[in-house]
Length: 224
Ligand SMILES: N[C@@H](CCC(=O)N[C@@H](CS)C(=O)NCC(=O)O)C(=O)O
Image (cartoon, rainbow, N blue to C red; front, side, top):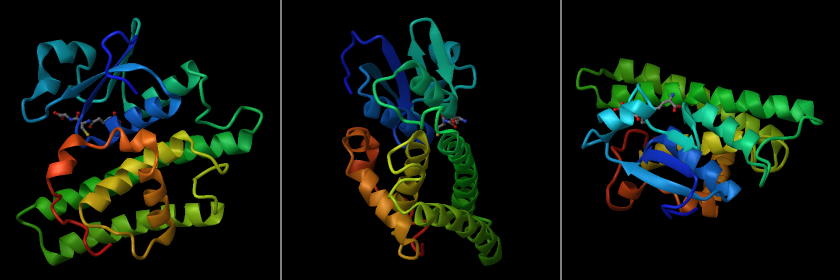
């Protein structure tokens, strides 16, 4: 990773944004040189006229390379993989079963994102009841159960093929977010080991959300 202003790639991201973090991790795993643009959500820097020209939805991540301007994190991951051959982050086409599985898991992480978002919003909702919170927590636990099982069945520390893929990169930031909110994965040993192992990677260590270093989460998921 580099923050040199001479790189041909520009990545716009926000501290703590899980989709943006995926893109940073993938770029770092590939060893890409990029200009890093950390935008402030508080200062509404994703809604400036200049940024809206890059992404009219006003969201990070945005990935620019030459004339190509991309938003939507999973699309960016697939573009990086297709366009930069430095280190494969997907199984090759001659391993169609593994390739299909990795693509499926990559897309499937959207379900985890939704379950986390629903439960987290409910935690912050002043009108919540024990029952409404339990519904969201149960849904999230069901979702976590899938991922625990996938890792357990694969039994390599990764989701597919015994090596890091875009699917792992897409999964990790959601687990890191849960951990920041108090989850230690005590009932999900494979998720715990995966989270720990991913945390030790340079690609992750060098892209940790800066504001996490000096602030705490909301304790939303301390029972997980
Ligand atoms: N589906 C998009 C989601 C991007 C997204 O929701 N980004 C959020 C941060 S996690 C954002 O930039 N929000 C800024 C805003 O809504 O003002 C992706 O995967 O890239």
